[in-house]
Image 1: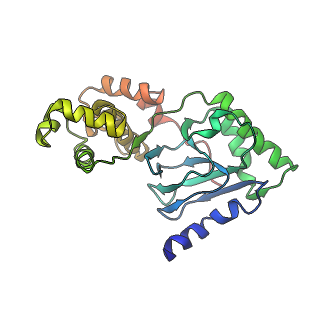
Image 2: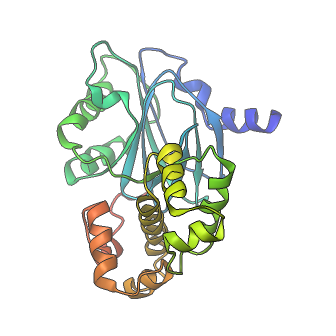
Image 3: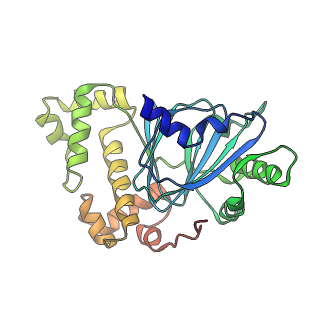
Length: 273
């Protein structure tokens, strides 16, 4: 508990809510591999650059790729775990206002377009409380205001946390065998289920089918591998169980809205301070 409290204090969490009316800004390289479970009274906009960040709530595990941001509503308990200690974390924390747009009430992951990218780059010079009435406060508030207008695609880059222990074992099996073709019938047989009963378990516990879970998990792993820049698109496809590059590319496009080759070649244009 002492260690967790130390890490939370280290990562400025208590400072976020110290001034209830300010917009709090913090940009820094992580330097650690975990910010323990915490919450704050302000909503959080977290942009990551350089690698993947895992954001975990009580019910879901979110996968935040570089060049995307996650919106975390006020009061939502979450932990933050970057894949690398060198990840650049760019945070803006916003006070909750009356009659806010429904956009701000739900967590979600969104790609950053050129307009939002330029606005985020402008925040590089800020750190700490942005006081109401100051130019920096006005600009930061404009960033918040524009989100519902430009962020229309909440990417399905999250997976639910299983409650049933039997399902937990199956999901670990999927995780450990992403490079193989995993058939639903084989999984049901191996773990002692009928196909019908296992289908019902997935729907009841995870609110999604086996194939939906399996597909998203494969694509999330593919994003990790692409960001490492060690493998070609074809090699990444094989690593996550796709023998057909076109099939892999089409599935990737359906989830992220761009081809894996485009994702691989895109430069990290939001530089570090």
